[in-house]
Length: 252
Ligand SMILES: [Zn+2]
Image 1 (cartoon, protein in one colour):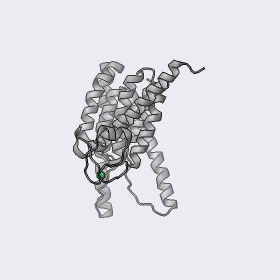
Image 2: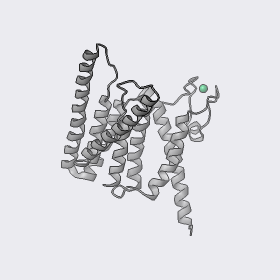
Image 3: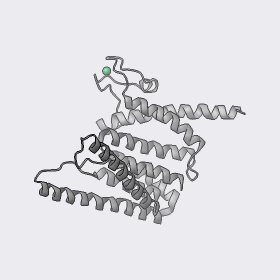
Image 4: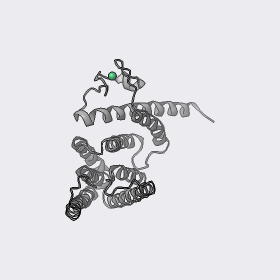
């Protein structure tokens, strides 16, 4: 039987989902451009976008440019994800804390996929958010070790990547610009170390590296089969780190 409580729950979570989608789209639009909560503008003509424009997914009032494909994907994904989190929140977090954490990870995910970058300002905000969260969830010892391992392991991989690039550049007699792992990934891994704590951060790192490796292996295979393979295609690690972290937060 569908009672009034179920209907209310569905309505509230669907509205929250739509609001979350609009917020994610706003942040993913403005943060890479201005690094602050500036007003959003149309990418084609620069006309300002209002809050209502975001909520109603309106096209630009001046040049009629419609919203991007990403905007629609994010809006729909949030509309499905928020009620799903409402039905099945991570047991240790509950709905509201999970919502804040997943919104943050969502912003990092979208910007990394779109721009291949994790902004330092976003990392700083993440650290500020993660410290009280980690202390509350794991206590200070696990939080501290989690940070040291998350940041330290990725920092080591980061420097190894630079050395490897230098060595390959010499061997091949040409510069390799693309880095496999950016410093943003190191920061993100540190933040996740704070949030997940020890020993879950090591499971997170391991799963992300395996997942990233498997998928990029598959990608390379497809490219070889289509005869379009070129070596040293960078893997964006942030999405894999985030997927692993979300799974681990459910197991907390
Ligand atoms: Zn416009």
